[in-house]
Image 1 (cartoon, rainbow, N blue to C red):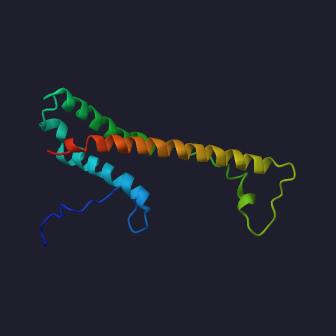
Image 2: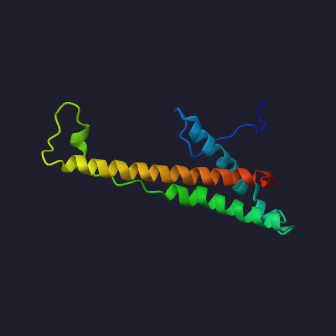
Image 3: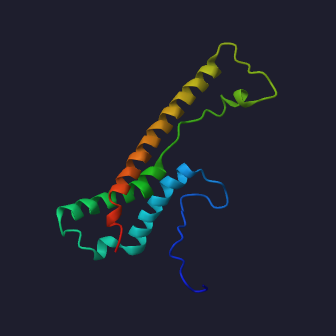
Length: 142
């Protein structure tokens, strides 16, 4: 088998090597790795006639949009700001929280709600984009 390319293996570059990855993350990252490999490795925009019909023109636009979202827009997401200097007392297991007026707890609650809302929005966006990718999968060939 030496010297032959292993075509049935998918190296998912957006997931870390050597550690456990939940299947829900693999199910998101694997199809987008296929898309990236297709766009970057097979260069479909240079040698496929995407003007053949309306469906192909639409698929070409969708491939480009999904690729751009995966490699540029999604990685640029910025998580909710964590006020590190405010919250460490909440995480300290060995001493009580000194929060007589409740400001630290209130700030933590606001951060958690903002973070959960953001995670939910990102999850919905990821799901929508994954479904869009599945809809055009038949065009990912050269």
